[in-house]
Image (cartoon, helix red, strand yellow):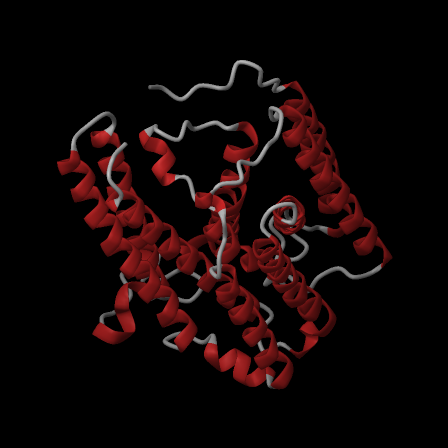
Length: 351
């Protein structure tokens, strides 16, 4: 069995709207670069003037256009309502965490900052989730390798790649445990933003944008796309690696923890697309699974609430980038849920 586009999948609407959106974004970015000297990945307090609001309205419209093109391209009834896509209680984890973090910020911005400092609980929780995910993916790689059958070798290799990725990101989060082990920063890394033993701070802004947008694409965008277009057959080995809706709900709040990155156009696109995807999930679930619809609606609120609070009260932040430290916690948690779901799927007998 191979992965191929469904025969009746017409890519023209999606290609057209993405092309139009990309051209408009390029024009907007060029204008802002020449007028305000903003790089495309600008990180500074958000622009909330009349221009900034009009800009966000345009980005919202472009996001809606992209989703419309994706849906028009998809075949028939887009989402498959099945047991594997029911969300259960999982989304309430992200609702609780996002609400708690916002409450801490509103109550005491200084405490919100202390929790997000290096070697603080948020950083260690992120690293712990990544290392646990690494261990699960290593276990999955071995199990897939021994399992045999079609695609077992590429599946094992991909699981191993996930394990390595989680390990590297976790170690980068802790600066390769430099502070715990007490070694000096290597000379070739000493020029990074924090003079620490990590690679991502050599190009902090670019690395952050790639990481956050990559997380959105894999944990939120890809699951929706695969459902909308039915890209990966259920029996194909690659379907094991496609995140399900539970993972989407755990990851979703990551797009709402922005302050200094709100001006970045792709960051706003990810925010608005996530809202639209969640709204579509909730609308569909309401027909047959009211509980899931309510959970999804609560997650949607947990995406909007942090973003609204930070935009309205961001001047109270001790560091303008503090929300992104919390953003980074939702990514490892979603990866951990994804790894656990894969492990549970492998324990089921083959059909």
